[in-house]
Length: 217
Ligand SMILES: Nc1ncnc2c1ncn2[C@@H]1O[C@H](COP(=O)(O)OP(=O)(O)O)[C@@H](O)[C@H]1O
Ligand SMILES: [Mg+2]
Image (cartoon, rainbow, N blue to C red; front, side, top):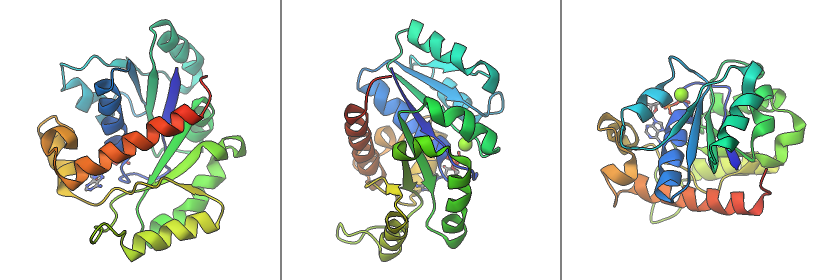
């Protein structure tokens, strides 16, 4: 069993969007998937997933005090992949959830505020999990002729210059991400030939490679 944490100390950066798209791609690939909505019971991840009644997802909604039990339940149910949709609450969450993760994706925008918040992210993530942490640039400006926008490149360079890892796939700010969910769909279902669908397919490929490079826990 492996665990992906989608964690960031900021709201509106795309944690739930990345979580649900990853969960559905994992289901499509034949994996048994559990989601942990750390915002439960108000969490939009649970609501979005439950409105897709055909999916065979397992819901884990533990408090931070019974995480071991929840992961044991997932193992007992032969889950292949747990996806944690983080909440921007506090360092508390990072400190509790990050150690369980084989891979941590931390979505961020490319704005000045988001760049300045990177320090906050680092100050709340235990150093022992730094090597599993990747920033994921979201809401980025569109590529032109397949070339990443200068702003996206600059933020990527800013992070790597500070010895931080960045997911090679950036997600563009596109209406498909919002509109698809109106129809209880992900972007690959809603507009399979669109740019958002291409990005999500690339992101999933990269995630599979990363998980294969890591050890099973
Ligand atoms: N790449 C994107 N392009 C356009 N809209 C996006 C993108 N990523 C997320 N959104 C939208 O931004 C809003 C916040 O995203 P969400 O995933 O809920 O963030 P978080 O879980 O971090 O609070 C949602 O309305 C979502 O549809
Ligand atoms: Mg959310």
